[in-house]
Amino acid sequence: MAFGLSDRVKNIAPSPTLSIDTKTKAMIAEGIDVINLSVGEPDFGTPEVACAAGKAAIDQQFTKYTAVPGIVELRKKIAEQLATKRLSYTADDILVSSGAKHSLYNAFMALCNPGDEVILPAPYWVSYPEMIRLAEGVPVILPTDESTGFKITPAQLEAAVTAKTKVLLLNSPSNPTGAVYTPEELQALAEVVRKHDFYVISDEIYDQLVYGVEQISIASLGEDIQKRTIVINGFSKSYSMTGWRVGYLAADRAIVKAMTSFQSHTTANPASISQKAAAAALDHKDDTMVPEFRWRRDYVLERLRAMPHVSCETPTGAFYVFPNCSGTFGKSYQGHAINNCDDFAALLLEKANISLVPGSGFGSPNNFRISYATSRENLAKAMDRLEAFLREVQ
Ligand SMILES: Cc1ncc(COP(=O)(O)O)c(C=O)c1O
Image (cartoon, rainbow, N blue to C red; front, side):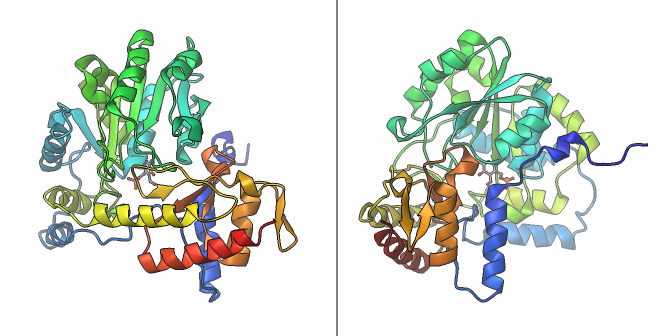
């Protein structure tokens, strides 16, 4: 007899973004006026057409199992959407899952053998290292900072390649930095991928949220690179559908077939109702979200740049800014020492009632993440509080 949890789950680190969120919600429940800048979801509603399609699905009893990789109607529409990004896929090259998180997990499980190395640029989204480890892969972290706009260089990638390299993870636009790779930068990285022949998992979930730059997929740079790439995307961010849980991947058909088989034994199809809503969402054209996010980004940057002890790059995508707070390290606020970004975020929450995520969870201990997916009014209040806090740091 042997009791106890598996090593697999015992070794998982809790999500730092979710734990900050939990603490924040507890403070709010106590009646404390906390401004939450830690959330990773748009503060916009799900498009009406998607809601209507979801309701119609229920009314029409579209409430049973569907095909494991998703209904053909949805996969066809996704293929059409990908074609607008110069990506050539058919419905058979697409696997719809219960959120992009699920798609990513499927991808790592399908590609990694124990000990396979996954090159992971930092700052990274918190779930990547844990998912890689769950798939028994080894995350090989490539640190980046403001000096390269939080992007890896081809030389850095080349130097990280070993005989065990299996996958390069790219996330453009990035959570948490908002950095977007240019076509030229992707081309240079693609050369290294071709030369050493490994896979790319390209998480493009923020692809529609870009400000004055073009987002392209590395997979669009040629048939050979498309064959090696698993494109990840979903409906959570671009269509404000976080709770509906619909994400997808597009890849070489043989890989999709293997992953579909894997999904058939784990979760089977994503929710039938959500699939109908997602298919309808693809007909929705929104021209308010991007300008509004852009306005907020510019506002936050302008405010931050007038504050002492912090500096901030200009992100060109997603809805995050990722300022550097290392100028506060070794200083204190009202007698409380700030030695790292965790102290900084904890003090901000406790003393200034602003909730944001320290960079440590993203593999970037000099920074912190602000999500500007909240109202202009909240942002103004939060920036006033942050400025007052920083002016007292000495
Ligand atoms: C970079 C990145 N990829 C994937 C996801 C997962 O999105 P979904 O809600 O589709 O699972 C997120 C959500 O925060 C994200 O930031």
